[in-house]
Image (cartoon, rainbow, N blue to C red; front, side, top):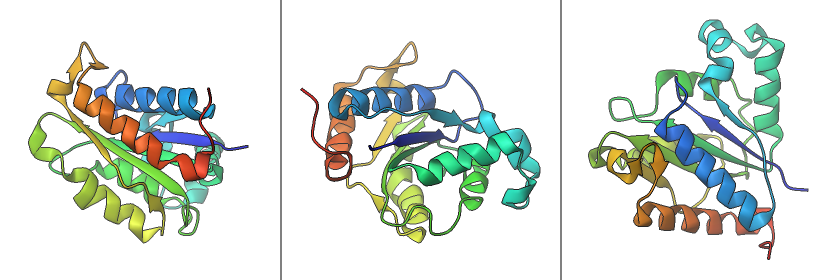
Length: 178
């Protein structure tokens, strides 16, 4: 049975990045019948902020990392801060075992205030997961402020991009549900 987990590098809830990730996870569930939890930095940020190594984390935070490492696929999403993912997002990624994402499908997504940050998924996130030898799916998703209305994703071009990214997960998540 396939398991998918999402990790959002966000400091607050609600957020556009969380809403984008929830949309992605709903679409994965509808298409493949695969569901899973969504975690935010808020779920582990306090212990992660002082954790120099994994053993410094609380048992709850370690369980979240174990769940990410044990998933068959992972959605990693981050808000854009000054042209990249947040430092705490990277810190949490640094606490993962170096081999845990090898050959695992990763869907990368980000959100930011404007379109000028759109390449963060290609120039910051994709190389990060390349270090782990992960299979980042070909289609990454970036949504800016203008793609949301009242916090919900509404832009047809981003909905289509999410659909393409989810299609890229097919070799790992199996056949579509009808």
